[in-house]
Length: 474
Image (cartoon, rainbow, N blue to C red; front, top):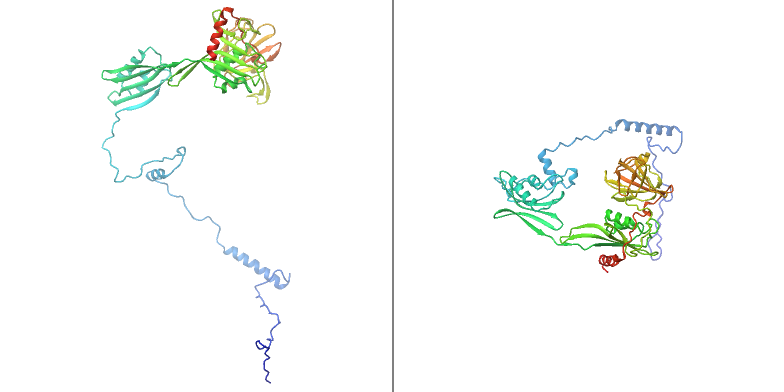
């Protein structure tokens, strides 16, 4: 029978649906070696798949190559010539053996020298040693013996001793059989004099050059802040000047309790300054303190009774109070103050009952005031110690000494030598541990006045005022 297709209006003819439409596609069955171990657990097919997995794993382990290190070897060491060339190309610190800047291999631009040219002159600087003279310095610098001796003779004729450590500028000429000829030698024979030995038509001659010196005193001012001593050091005062200022100031005020942070220190010291810039500080001339509460301190160094002492320029003619006429026991700077601190050896906090002076081994120690020695010997952690009673319950103690030269029971005068600085007992280095004890209680040595301020005659008042105005620039 013939069926004509039905054609919808305006469309294509309809076709018959295939018979396979709507029937699920059948997946192919896996082979016997492919087993899903997640299905049909413990069935014969499952056990077969598990055994097959074990067999394949064992075969892979047996047939796999061994895990051995890859074959290799150490590079052959470089020959010395090769190493030198590599170092020339490398950039590394000299401390690690680098040797940069070497010449590379020769090129046609390199022309060998038939002989090494000799230097016609040699300029150098040398420092005069502690046990040598000018002649020996020139000899070790390469000068001829005759020129060295003649130069030393000319410099000695200047009448100035050349201090060890002086820098000497030397110019030497061509080398001869006995050394190089001296062309010029220059050095400073002092702050105000330069000596030059130079060769002229008639041989070596000495030339003196005077250097202008400015002797204007140096003034240092500043705020006390957290500590007077360290504020002085920060303002530019040397340890010796700072110690001298504290020693002078202690004649008028209790440094440990009467000096406030907002007070301002004022000191003037002698100073010599050369036109070339060098300077040498001299002794302290004036010690002042501007106080917010209390009278200002103006202490002037002035000769009284044939000796230099401190006079109260603000209240001249009236003696300032003084405790016992004490003075500084050693020339040195204060390295540790009075109060609680961490002990440098025991490493725990404890009371520091005195002050420490940093001084060299063997520096002289003097009695701070008149008195009687009550102890002179070993005192445990204090090492060699001297204690002096000054009356009215006041004692001074000097510890860590290297040598004691007084005996217990003997009388001493202020400024008398009693021993030498050392490091005996519990000590980290040479220094003086100094204590002041009043009625059995340790007090800050800086609070004890070190010397009495001397009264002056009324006739000297005008001279004192004139000197004070000159120092302060008023």
